[in-house]
Image 1: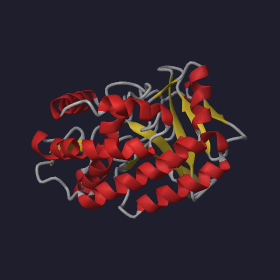
Image 2: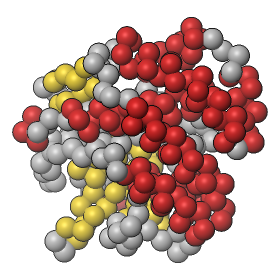
Image 3: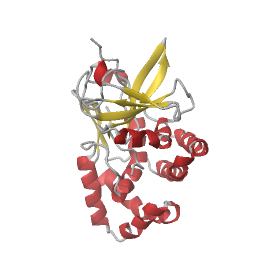
Length: 292
């Protein structure tokens, strides 16, 4: 029987923004089919970097301790949400210049929304966040998540507790981020001894936490025969870890093959694996920011 691993949490530091932007540029050359999305992501990461530099952690964003879930982020409407709403107009103006054609068309309509309409979109997102499996990103959802990410990541990095205040991940059932309670975006494999250890990366605040190798993070399935792994010679360094019980899958970035990989960026570059997994009837555990 597998035992739970000791829990620690990692959040990306501010200097990771330059690393993400540079990685997007390199991968755009390596994967021509994903070049457009990677080029746009590089620009978007630069915009998010500027937000992170301007936004000090919101005084009204609270961090609380819960014995069953560990350290958890809670959004206060007068703190985090106001910051996001105040940034919406500027972000939409930026999208007018930077967005790819499909999204640019939606920006025209979204600029007609007033503050109360955007508050409703944001409240709906926060209320349902992490409760749905991957689905195509509606433009309005993309806008609020793109603005929330840098602040959530910043809060996670500054407010995560020491390891002794975090509970181990559950050995069964669904795994959630120990900070913001969102679902994992991707898995990561890193060298450890004679093999590799696995961790999960949050889809919102990008906190990283250790997780068991042979357990489905969506439903807790532990039977080896129900957890197939799929790889492609055309996409080295990434794999699809599926579950035949819940029909979910998590894409995992293997840093033992490419130590320069940046999980949230390499995820975008390897969209061909997502298309293949969908064709096989699997559903992604959690959409990435630009999933369509």
